[in-house]
Length: 225
Image (tube, rainbow, N blue to C red):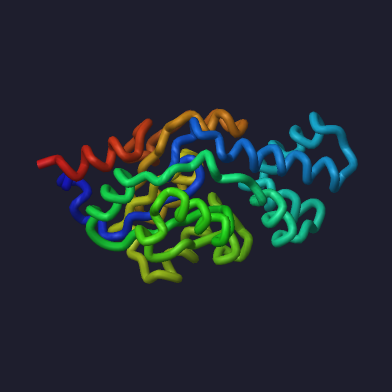
């Protein structure tokens, strides 16, 4: 193990575009369904629905949070609708499963999605047995990353010491609250942040590690002597 990471005993991973490549564009299906949902809800054309969707995401952390705040949308109804997608673009990822298995300590998924959706993805990737638990948006009290309360709730739920933890996410802004409480941070810089209408923060002082390829990074730290 890379010497700098030897104290880490809690390995926490985001789900979408982190545990699978953003090039697969699974989230593109969800994005399209969110646009359709907003169009139906508000009676607006697709272009306007898409504009509103991105605004909710940027202003509230997730599209759902914005819809709940501004339109009192039922989160269960919304999540069931937008997550009703085909996952045949995902294949089993044995190398990733093997790398995660080699990490010392606990492994958790920390996602703004819901657990049923997360578990479908983990099953497709062959990662169902790789993680102790999924901490989802319902466990966050529907207040998603990057709200500080989401990270505090994760630590409280699993008795996690942030200073002995690493958090990996494809959204740089989601790493800032993790760093603030003492976590080591890994940015999976694969372009998904820009594709979702976010250019990212100018300052990167809160990022300890960055990679374009999660598996490559895991092999690199595990093989370091």
